[in-house]
Length: 222
Image (cartoon, rainbow, N blue to C red; front, side):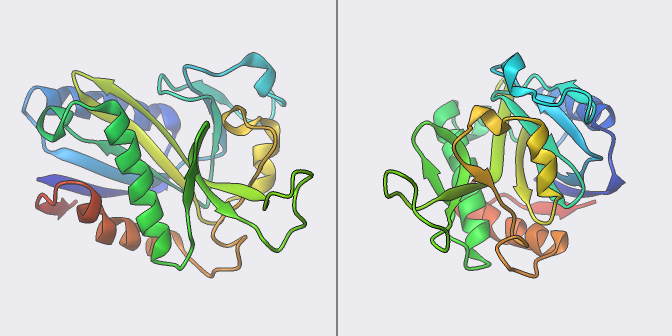
């Protein structure tokens, strides 16, 4: 059973992290179902295990939380759908690379529900969209923006943290960091792409596409 939960309001990061820690421990002990939590945070930055001090451009802009997940700096805030994914890889295959690829594929499938073509790039974490309406770069390449970030951690082969999809956040807030350490590309959102999409729309798309990528276990909503 995979439990889906929508957390109301803007959830403090420390509260969500403590709840994840507890849930992951209970899943590992066989005392709780796997879970996917959908939520928003107040404006903040998180630092992954590979973060570099120089990539925190404006350290006093928002609170900075050490996340313990893989990756570098990222921004979370209102208008961004965060999905915390707590799945038992003891049951789903102990393959970290395959799991990250499955998360990327899940995001791409969800974006496809809105006719948005998400893509992955070697050496660049997350999901990207091309912006052909902009002038090509110096090398003639079509500009690309990041629309979703992925960062995970495993404990006893149970995953936590997960992914974030930009629905309608204030994109200027990404200016306080170098998102995921990548300086040569921008950040976008579904609304920035001209789509009248809500967080609820994205939640529905994530729920519809989950079973295409991961083992289609029964789900319950709390």
